[in-house]
Image 1 (cartoon, rainbow, N blue to C red):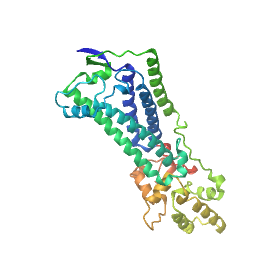
Image 2: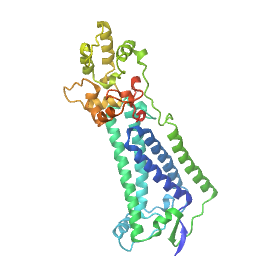
Image 3: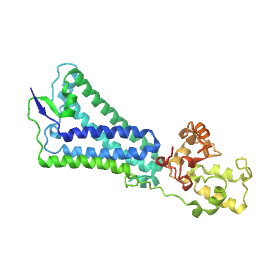
Image 4: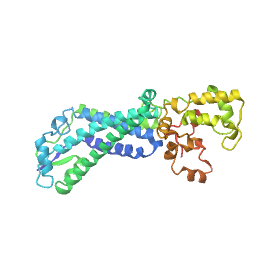
Length: 366
């Protein structure tokens, strides 16, 4: 047997970029404030794999889809002989052929569901318009995205495990081939045309540019925050003046109507202080709070807060809601030990735009 060039430099660089982007997407999914970074890696992977799909239709031996092995009988034989004397393949074996197509399909579904969840739940990106119509189903969109993403991670892990097992039991060149491109066997080495080389350069260059551009441009159409910031001083001067003179302004959508009604009916004992106002001003602010309460909002915090309220529950403050407690576990200790926060009600220490009605995950500080 002789050494044959099976994987071009473009295919090998694609594998490296795919691993880097997948790792970046996975690591950035753990923190809410990294949501835009997570989306950037997702979209960049989409551009990378779109190029790989086109690459599969070019006449490049071993990499083109026509050379993939989808013979089910051979897949069965390959699986049953994985620990024995199984057939060797220069290109993709039956298992990797199915795995690669599966990864492409799951990645596409992950990107689509991710873009929808980003728009429906966060009101951001190209699907942000859906936040005003199907916002009540935002949890479903998130769960669907997580399902496809987890399935993709599982398939990638299985693909890597298969390659490692093959290297351990059979060919020591199986992993090295993804570094230098060579395998041992009978056949011809690949030779790319000028057009194919040009396509490879443009494909990989655009994928890397897409990642860098998106990471540096959070206001791009794919990532833009389309939630309008609210000028409460203009929208309702009395609310901004009277409420903002003693404490920060809390957006009305963070509590249900019943809570605002209770609060406005007992201003003489407003968390230990007398915040009494004349009847006309009180009624005006109460009406404004009721009309903009959680029941009338499409914001993520409002939807999830209402969903977690038990029957008959009427929280007296935002920090008493189950949604707030779940999202801020351990914050009491952090607030007490950090003079910049001081107390758990100082929301703007971490949410700089909360007094403008915005508490988007990616704006979280600290």
